[in-house]
Image 1 (cartoon, one colour):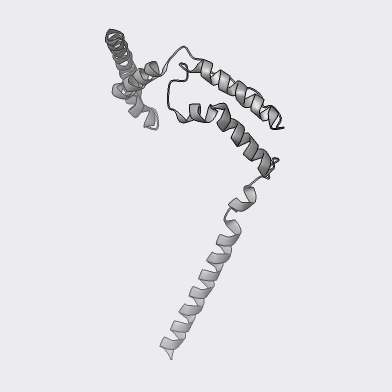
Image 2 (spheres, rainbow, N blue to C red; image 1 turned 180 degrees about the vertical axis):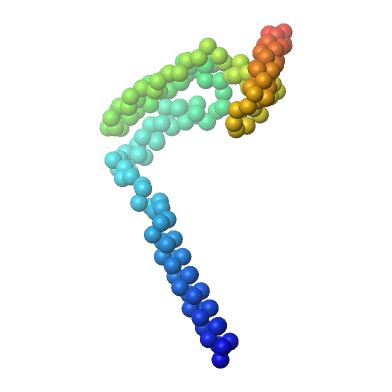
Length: 160
C-alpha cells in the first residue's frame, strides 16, 4: 500500500511540475509572429520594384563581388535607370543612395587586416579585461602591427 501511495504521489507531483513548466513556457516565450510589421506596399508594387531593380542592372552589379570603386560610373548609371524605371512603373522615386567614398581600396584593407591578425592585435581584442601584462602585450602588438603593415605595403608596391 505504501508503494502504491508513493507512486501515485510521485505521478501527481510530476504532472503538476510538467503542467507548470508548460504554462510558464507558453506565457514567457516571445512570439515572433506578432513582431512582423505590415507592409505599406502592395504585391504589385513590390513586383514592379523588383522588375525595375533587375532591368536597371543593379541586381547584376550587386551580385558581383568586386571593388566598387572601379565600377562607380556603371553603378551611378544603373541607379539612375532604376529611378527612371520606378517612376515609369508609377512608384515613387526613392532617395538616392549615399555614396561612400574612401581613400583606401580593397587591397589596402586586406593588407591592414592581415597585419592586424599577424601582429596579435586580433587575439588581444578578443580577450576580456585589462591588466598591466595585457597593456604591455598590446603595446608590443601595435608596434609589430606597424612593422608588418609597412612591410606589407612595401611588398605590395614592389609587386605592382
